Length: 112
Length: 115
Image 1 (cartoon, rainbow over the protein chains, first blue to last red):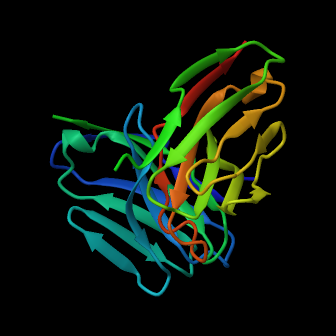
Image 2: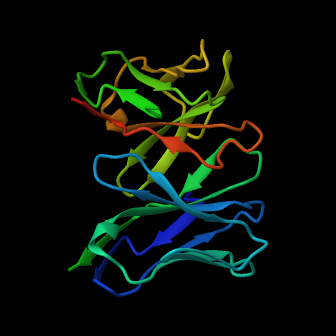
Image 3: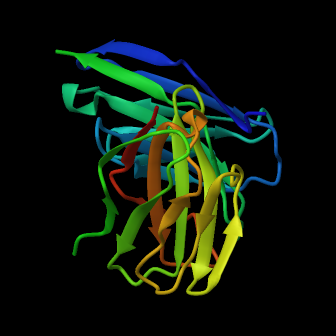
């Protein structure tokens, strides 16, 4: 059973556009929600993370929006660039726990 | 500072063979883990360790064995390879054992095919 559901599976965006990736979870004990970026042939790298005590976190062009009541969170990439083309994974975990539960990934392609 | 280093990068095995995937980190991290990445499945935790001599099972441990004799190294052993173990394997580490997944530093993976 997938603990974190991610959509869409793939996404094509024009340069300068906004990329939006959505995730949903069921376990209300989760209190740590990171997003990882993965380029081909490389391991995932932490992009940005949020905790449920805030509804939004922004780092440069990347923003996480968090809706605790709906148990959903999303990644917004503003002014998308071809260099953002990668696979993005959302994840969820619990403080102190030894596991992160990953979504199935979204392959983003930004067209010049 | 190399971070997390995984070897080999690619490997092809025959069913029934055994092998060890190597993982080393030079960041003095206490927590280390192994994930497998399969299409449409995301990453799933196989085994983890919170320090030398301490290991535990993750979400999908069957068919795999680990040990942690030093802080730096955390090898993953396939006991008798099966086609279902064809996957990309990632090793990860983090500094804190009280918040072990925040964040995790991943290696570049080992792509394993089992025929």
